[in-house]
Image (cartoon, rainbow, N blue to C red):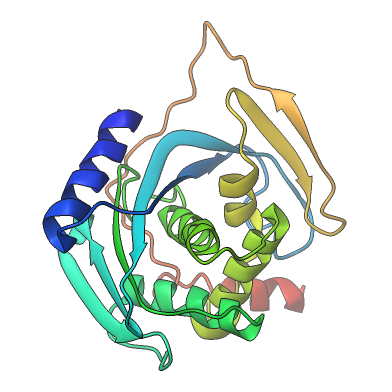
Length: 233
């Protein structure tokens, strides 16, 4: 499945931009076993990355414009990397927020082409948005030779969410996507940021992810009310 996703992104990029991508990067979604809403309260959580991903293909285009094609929603976006402001499409704003944070950190960005596609169900609580952010940050860092650590990726995404998108989230989702390890969960102290891996061998049992058909959207679900309510306690 993973190789098929890589190949699909490569082929769609070739069809869309008439050239192969220079960079291909993937980022996983996540589950959280213990510790919902504890990350922005600086508590503990027990997440794990899953075998569902978003894959990105990027190349430079010798302009000042970003040309981005989101395969899963069949939408294109074109905007200047020098004029980044909120728009009407949330997925585009995730992209713009990341670019703005990188520029604030001194990154010199120019125009690029991008195609991304995933198999993480959107709005399912599996952090497709964190995979979008973190995979895109790593893609840009590779394309523009920007030095970023794994914690830098977490911080850039979290700052973009908090300040540009006004989503008052913690670091759980980004941490899970960036630090995830096959067949392991991670205990994370969100205050000290200490973490440890633990083998997650559950056979003969299985962890079941159940589709409730209720879409999750941070900006409209009341999510931003939770941090304020916690501070009142």
